[in-house]
Amino acid sequence: MSRIRVEAEAWRELLEIAGYMVNAAKNRKAAVRLSDEFDRKCEIYARQPEMGDLRDDLGDDLRSFTFRTWYVAVYEPLDDGIRVLRVFDGRSEYGRHFVD
Image (cartoon, rainbow, N blue to C red; front, side, top):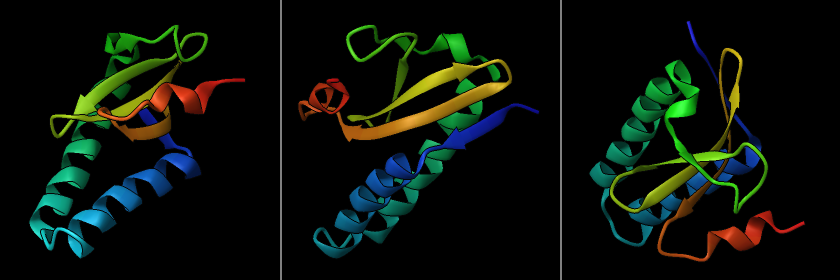
């Protein structure tokens, strides 16, 4: 079985997005769909870590995948899965979070 490791910062970002959907947009179903699709995509990419888009602009050997249309998960491939580093709204300038 492939391993999925989600860093605390990525969990916080995902919960922040879902919280906005529930509290501001009053759309609990959208928040559940967001979480479900994130989980499903993590499972897919953990089985084939090199499948994601290579993101040399964000760091060495980082990759990404999209979910729920415009959300982006940035991850590091592992020998036995993936380590999700960050989750962003793809419409934002999320690259600034990776600047050294």
